[in-house]
Image (tube, rainbow, N blue to C red):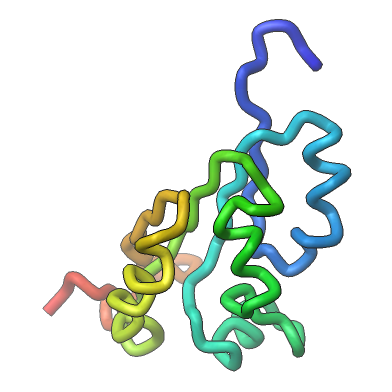
Length: 124
């Protein structure tokens, strides 16, 4: 451990978290940011481009609950018009009793050189 270093954090989509968590904790990890933009398994698989991955599953819930991971936990959810804006209340319900912070992040509407304002949730 480095002197003066207070936080060692990782940002992850969580698909390998169960397998890697013991070694990460041993290395000094004390905070995790989980990028979770959807609770719908098919949408999650689309985002991570892997079949059979579902971070909202019962197997992963103990990690989110801090049972297996007594670390600072934060879930970041990018809200995107036409993709997951209908899940915001589901996120609140899923995480309301878990010892973690949830941040709803506005989608940054840039695709290379062009703006994609049509999927920006706050735009009308």
